[in-house]
Length: 241
Image (tube, rainbow, N blue to C red; front, top):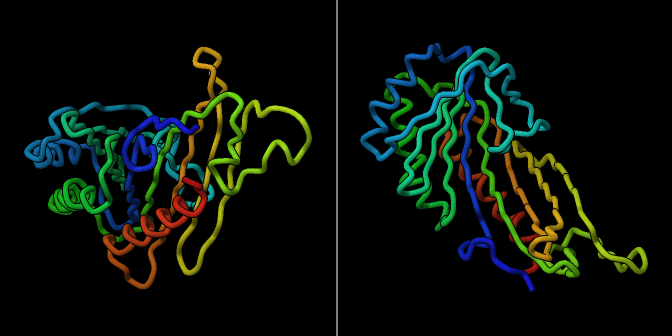
C-alpha cells in the first residue's frame, strides 16, 4: 500500500515556479539583492542566505537539468536565498533568474501565484528587473513510500512490471524522459527509487517539470500558467491513484 510521505496534494514535498530573463535586457549587479530584500522583507521573507563564488552557469536550453536540487547560477555570480520559514516559502535570486518555492503542505497553484509569485514578481519589476522573459518552469517534487515487495508499476502507468521480465524483485529504478510539445513547451519526467533497509520499504521520488519558452509575446503570467497546466496534466496522467 502506498504510504503518503506528505498527506496533502499527491505527496508533493515541493513546488517551484522559476523564471529566466534575457541578460541583454537586464543590467545586473549585486546591489539588486539588497534592493529586492528591502521590498520582500515586508512580505514575510525575513531570512536571507548568500552563496558566493558559484563556478557554474545557468543553461537556458531545456535539455539541461534545472531542478531545485541542481540549479546553477551564471559563472562568477552570487546567489541569494530569501526565506519565509513560517509559511514554507523561499525565493532564489541570481543574475537574470528568479524562482519561487513552496514546501509541504502545498494547497494549490492559485494560492502559490497569489501569495508568492505575483507579489514577488511585482517587487522584482519595481527594482528595474524582469524585462524580456526567456523561459518559465513549473516543477513538482513528489516523495512516496511503498513496501519493499510492492511493484512501482502498481502506482505509475509508465513503469514496466518486474513480472514482465520473469520471477524476481525490484531493487531500484532510475527513469528519465523528455518531450518537446508544440508550440513552446518541454516536459520532463524523472523518477528514482531507493531501497531503505532500515524501514523495510522503498522511497520513490518523482519529478514532473514543464518549461514554457517565450512565444508570441505571451506575458509571464500566461507562460507560467501554461507550464503549470501541462505539468499538472502529465502528473495526473502517469499516476494511478
